[in-house]
Image 1 (spheres, rainbow over the protein chains, first blue to last red):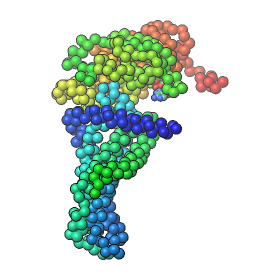
Image 2 (image 1 turned 90 degrees about the vertical axis):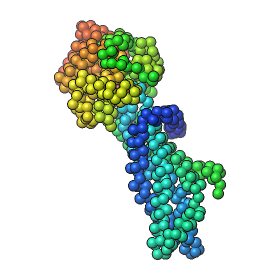
Image 3 (image 1 turned 60 degrees about the vertical axis):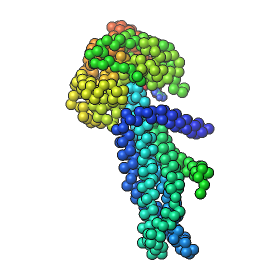
Image 4 (image 1 turned 45 degrees about the vertical axis):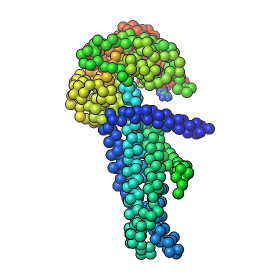
Length: 255
Length: 268
Ligand SMILES: Nc1ncnc2c1ncn2[C@@H]1O[C@H](COP(=O)(O)OP(=O)(O)O)[C@@H](O)[C@H]1O
Ligand SMILES: [Mg+2]
């Protein structure tokens, strides 16, 4: 019962924070410096790990597909499988998970320590709403950076697949066959689907992490607890939202 | 404008009328813990009111009510006729709070800590902001710390930076939460002098929470003594010194009785 109330409290404060932050969207031109800093933190610093992981995910996809398809003689479809899976599902999913682990945890840690050390209280006495100065620029930045990161993840993943397909002996498909299949089956619609997902996941992750950080009470130990809670909540949100969002997107744009 | 509009020039602040504060039957409970039990007192415009009391008696909680960071269980705090719990009050009256631990923004340099308020509320150009910030730093002899970060400062410096940061807001009401705790006696005296001279210079109303006896007796116009969430007396320093109430006498001049220590009396 108590836990249910906590969850309701949590959802309530996330929504309240959302409304307040969106209300401050008009102040973005006045906070360009913060916005650019957040773009840098969210985009640039996650880029290397996004690239490395998506390369390997693309590679593993190709490897598994090559293994399962070799008996059917369907190896030439590896490109389409990697292309679609990356674009529709794995690209956005992986970028969001990395965002939660790498950026979300840092956001929660920063805001939670500001809360615990009364910096948030100080802002409030100065009439500077934390939602305006701390949350809104981060939300704006994640909206801009998610598509960029996802497109890069897709491209690198596709090349990872191509690399494995042409270099692993039992698959041995040349790049032009691979990319031919990829281009033929992966439509703009599939990529757009994935970008919408990434946009939603990224926004929710940053919002949830901000909200949990700002709701921290107590001392240093609670900062750690908040970070854990923020990352776990983000991961759950990503997976649950993914299911429903996939359903909705399939309804809106059937193949 | 979404903030208490500070006067255009530091010297002009003398024209801003000082504000009075009225605490009316304030009660605050945290769950079953009763922290403030029907506290009432009044702070006159331009006065230095020192709130004394043992640790845990609810002094910080009381201050948080005055800036509107805490909602009262019942009763209210009125600042110049505005309810402190209402958000708009901070647009009518400019209130600065010097937090006990400073609450400096750790990710910003001292200069940026002071400039943040002015920048966020677009008070003048960057050059004007610089003048104001440097002026506030100079008042507290902190000129050399402008580029430092809070983590590089000593305890006394942090307290002074916190005061300077409240000062750039050009507040009409300035609240200090234990400004001299954790400081050496000379630094404590310096801070007391600063509080007194700020009042004389800018006529800001000050509420100082402290259990520093020297500060209270030297700079206070009036002193309130809070014990276990109840205000047991309000009076001038002379009245406090003359009081015969055993609780007050013991608080001001605790006796060291090594053969019959206080903590042993608690056990029986
Ligand atoms: N947010 C809070 N939740 C629960 N209890 C609190 C909270 N803030 C303060 N208290 C309790 O209120 C009492 C008074 O605290 P405080 O005002 O900080 O004392 P002090 O007079 O030393 O400043 C303490 O017992 C403290 O534990
Ligand atoms: Mg205190």
